[in-house]
Image (tube, rainbow, N blue to C red; front, side, top):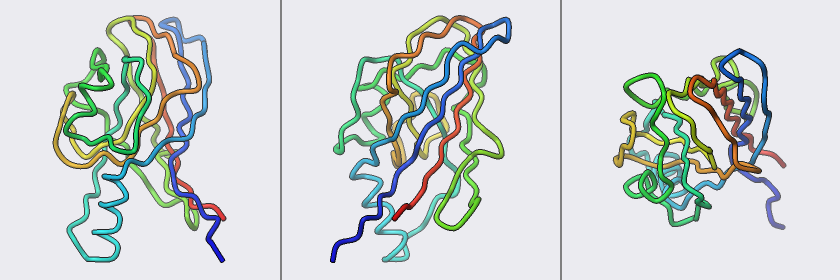
Length: 165
């Protein structure tokens, strides 16, 4: 018998215009790169050191994540979007909210843009630095459709990881 369980993040994105009016809502399921699977196996089964701080970023390149993506190259391949307030990527504060479910629902990531762009997707990585290339890439997603943002838009992102049967 094979397991029907599927692990992965679902991203919920809400964009508000500079005047505060909601412009768009979108939901998309991620890809968990091979690098993430290796990390989960190493930590969960081999007792290697785990990381408890993760950072969420967005990208503006017309890029579709692949299983072979790694933190070392993802920012450049996907054209990480860094024109937003704050010196670093915002922290994705993941909490266990129920059996088998981790989410930043209690404190969604909020990105206030400082330039117009089209966002194609998001990701969760170990590095806090904008454009960072160290650590592990645990999630990458291409949004259901490109998301236009303006200078001063607010992008709110909730990422929920659910092991479902």
